Length: 308
Ligand code: UDP
Ligand code: MG
Image 1 (spheres, rainbow, N blue to C red):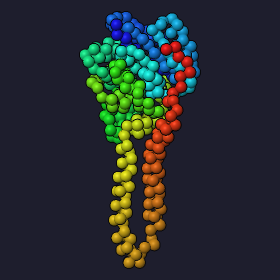
Image 2: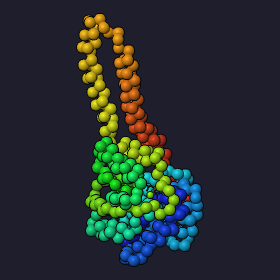
Image 3: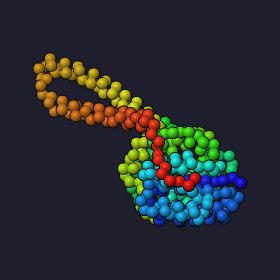
Image 4: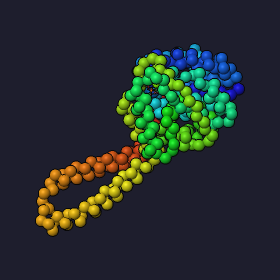
């Protein structure tokens, strides 16, 4: 019997765990009775009793296991840890808040049985979703694709099935700032996308603050391309060329005797180029920061308890 393992990152999700557990188990009971189910919850440093809930759940049902981080490491690392500890023939990662409908699992499994190694999903939003969230997600993918080398489809979510083969590859990718939405298309193999309608969050609030979303955007871009560095080089060239063009004008106004009038334009140029240099330094800094993190060879996450 093939085992399908569901990996669920949870950060303060005590209001959702039970509902997700029931949703998934009933789908398996009704539609996937030919498969063994395993569920692996990753508690990402929650402070709302999530861990106690998970312990109880795993005692009452031995298909359930859990990992618990020593602190909050973030969604991407929680999913990565789940994949690292997983053992199923296929592994499905999904959010805890039921925005990823368990009802889609049978379709994903069917695609996997047809020979796809990656069954990813594309989210379409229901009409009631706040405009802010929809727009920010749209801009996020536009920017990401403009700036990076792998194609990341708009609306791709961390709701996907990976075959054991792909999971083994991802386990080997020891990135300190993993960005799975880029890593998964990057590994290749036979991939397919299926659309789904994102549900409303079942309970609680979104754990993605604006800060976390911005961080994800920067990680996403800089984890997948050095294009922003080229952008800096091109900008540098462009402006050097422009300043060369400026020289004849300077000589001309010197010969004319009218060269002192330019205080405003001088300050403008200084401020402008100062800003530009800071931006470019910032871009380079982000990459150096990544090298720094990677060379320290700290573990990317710390598991404090688990029953795997
Ligand atoms: N999550 C996590 N660590 C974090 C933030 C979020 O493990 O630091 C989990 C969260 O519990 C949920 C999933 O990641 O299962 C997606 O988060 P959320 O629903 O808040 O994001 P949104 O759907 O609003 O993008
Ligand atoms: Mg959510």
